[in-house]
Amino acid sequence: MSKADALGGSATFDAVAQPMSSRAASFAAFAGQSSAPSATSDTTHTETLRVPVDRLAHNPYNPRATLAAIEEMADSLAGKGIIQPLTVVTRAVFLAAHPDHASDLAAAEYVVVDGNRRLAGAALAGLDDVPVHVDDSLAQDADTLLETALTAAVQHENLDALDEAQALQRLVEVHGSQRAVARSLGKSSGWVTQRLALLNLTPELKQAVSEKTLPLDVARTVGQLPEQQQQSAAEQVLQQRATKKREKTAKKAEQPAPFRKADAARPAAEGQSARADSSDELQVLAQELRGRLTPEQVQKLIELLLE
Image 1: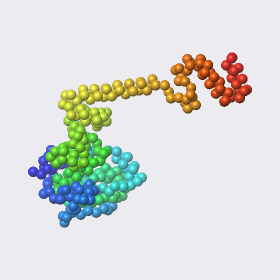
Image 2: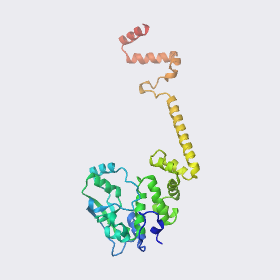
Image 3: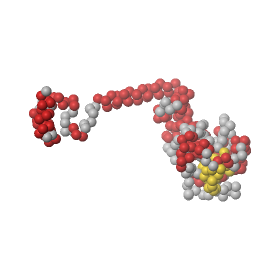
Image 4: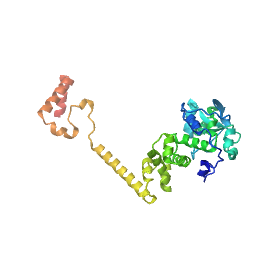
């Protein structure tokens, strides 16, 4: 049984696997590691070119449940264009590994492995074509294409937290362990464990994560607890944070306002009335006024004070 078959349970990830070939080389090439050996298969080719948007198909294996913030992406692309080429494979090579997905591709000549959000943004922005990097080594078999799509998605920081957790779980099933996934991504085992913890949350807490009402650090912590303890633990942490925030705000409000630069040598407002009786303080004030006012102004000020 192939790793892709072992995933099961989802039409998206059900694929017809072929024998593994040049897997390490294809992933090294995708990651940009120049030390990796180059693929030598007769059916593999790589090149960079510009392709009309309507000749590109979204990857059926894209781990993103939804392509978020497409409007913002479109605005950016309309002004600056696409800087980083999309990574694609040719239609023929994709269907050789996944013959059941022909209907998903329509008339497209290429399938996007990395850059589905950029493709959606380009279409919305009305771009005629986009730069692409064609690398058929990434689709030599079902396992490699699956792993490439998941790895590319996880490496994007703007991937939705739950989508990221699901992608990591599938990578664990492909690699066989969390440690192997961490090594493949250049992350720590703890990094993987914390993100997978989101999948253990109750449906209510998952909804809170999706709605961004539950901070991710709290969600990743309580997700490692038994389900019956998660809700109360989350509420306790949030309550503690709210209390600390109120205390910090109250403490800040009790602090005296900063002195104005011109009044830096004067006493603080709360102690000013008591200290103003000091003859030394009055002398300092009188000297300061004499330095600022003309004799006529001093006389006028005295008259005003005596009224």
